[in-house]
Amino acid sequence: MRLFLAGVRDSEIANLEQIANLDQEEREKFDYLIKRFTKADFETMSDSLENLRTMKRFGRFGMWFFGFIVAGAGAAAAVKVFFTAGAPKG
Image (tube, rainbow, N blue to C red):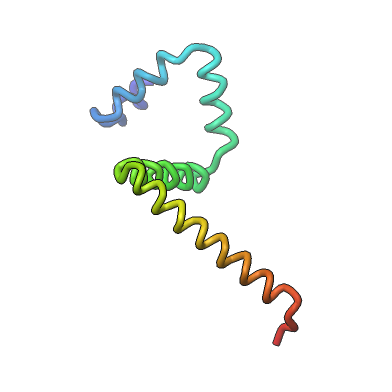
Protein backbone atom coordinates (compact mmCIF):
# COMPACT_ATOMS: atom_id res chain seq x y z
CA MET A 1 0.00 0.00 0.00
CA ARG A 2 2.87 2.39 0.78
CA LEU A 3 4.40 1.76 -2.64
CA PHE A 4 1.06 2.51 -4.29
CA LEU A 5 0.59 5.73 -2.33
CA ALA A 6 4.17 6.76 -3.00
CA GLY A 7 3.42 6.70 -6.72
CA VAL A 8 0.33 8.88 -6.45
CA ARG A 9 0.68 12.48 -7.57
CA ASP A 10 -0.42 15.18 -5.16
CA SER A 11 -3.06 16.34 -7.64
CA GLU A 12 -4.66 12.86 -7.61
CA ILE A 13 -5.08 12.53 -3.83
CA ALA A 14 -8.54 14.15 -3.89
CA ASN A 15 -9.67 11.55 -6.43
CA LEU A 16 -8.41 8.73 -4.21
CA GLU A 17 -10.28 10.19 -1.24
CA GLN A 18 -13.50 10.17 -3.27
CA ILE A 19 -12.98 6.51 -4.20
CA ALA A 20 -12.22 5.60 -0.59
CA ASN A 21 -15.43 7.28 0.59
CA LEU A 22 -17.77 5.44 -1.81
CA ASP A 23 -20.63 3.50 -0.26
CA GLN A 24 -21.32 -0.15 -1.20
CA GLU A 25 -23.67 0.62 -4.12
CA GLU A 26 -21.28 3.20 -5.57
CA ARG A 27 -18.37 0.75 -5.24
CA GLU A 28 -20.31 -1.88 -7.19
CA LYS A 29 -21.03 0.63 -9.95
CA PHE A 30 -17.39 1.72 -10.01
CA ASP A 31 -16.28 -1.92 -10.16
CA TYR A 32 -18.64 -2.47 -13.11
CA LEU A 33 -17.13 0.51 -14.94
CA ILE A 34 -13.59 -0.67 -14.36
CA LYS A 35 -14.24 -4.25 -15.50
CA ARG A 36 -16.62 -3.66 -18.44
CA PHE A 37 -15.48 -0.42 -20.06
CA THR A 38 -12.41 0.02 -22.22
CA LYS A 39 -10.23 3.09 -22.56
CA ALA A 40 -11.89 3.80 -25.92
CA ASP A 41 -15.32 3.79 -24.24
CA PHE A 42 -14.17 6.39 -21.72
CA GLU A 43 -12.59 8.51 -24.46
CA THR A 44 -15.86 8.44 -26.40
CA MET A 45 -17.84 9.46 -23.31
CA SER A 46 -15.37 12.25 -22.58
CA ASP A 47 -15.64 13.56 -26.15
CA SER A 48 -19.44 13.43 -25.97
CA LEU A 49 -19.48 15.32 -22.68
CA GLU A 50 -17.12 17.93 -24.11
CA ASN A 51 -19.47 18.38 -27.07
CA LEU A 52 -22.37 18.89 -24.66
CA ARG A 53 -20.35 21.43 -22.67
CA THR A 54 -19.58 23.29 -25.89
CA MET A 55 -23.25 23.36 -26.87
CA LYS A 56 -24.18 24.58 -23.39
CA ARG A 57 -21.69 27.44 -23.67
CA PHE A 58 -23.45 28.65 -26.81
CA GLY A 59 -26.83 28.51 -25.07
CA ARG A 60 -30.13 27.99 -26.86
CA PHE A 61 -28.74 29.27 -30.17
CA GLY A 62 -25.92 26.73 -29.94
CA MET A 63 -28.36 23.90 -29.31
CA TRP A 64 -30.38 24.83 -32.39
CA PHE A 65 -27.23 25.32 -34.47
CA PHE A 66 -25.68 21.98 -33.49
CA GLY A 67 -29.09 20.33 -33.90
CA PHE A 68 -29.27 21.54 -37.48
CA ILE A 69 -25.75 20.26 -38.12
CA VAL A 70 -26.62 16.82 -36.76
CA ALA A 71 -29.94 16.76 -38.65
CA GLY A 72 -28.19 17.78 -41.86
CA ALA A 73 -25.55 15.10 -41.46
CA GLY A 74 -28.25 12.52 -40.77
CA ALA A 75 -30.25 13.63 -43.81
CA ALA A 76 -27.16 13.51 -46.02
CA ALA A 77 -26.36 9.99 -44.82
CA ALA A 78 -29.97 8.88 -45.42
CA VAL A 79 -29.97 10.31 -48.95
CA LYS A 80 -26.63 8.65 -49.69
CA VAL A 81 -27.91 5.27 -48.48
CA PHE A 82 -31.19 5.70 -50.36
CA PHE A 83 -29.52 6.46 -53.68
CA THR A 84 -26.56 4.08 -53.42
CA ALA A 85 -28.06 1.05 -51.68
CA GLY A 86 -29.16 -0.71 -54.87
CA ALA A 87 -26.44 0.64 -57.15
CA PRO A 88 -24.06 -1.94 -58.65
CA LYS A 89 -20.55 -1.83 -57.28
CA GLY A 90 -17.69 -1.26 -59.65
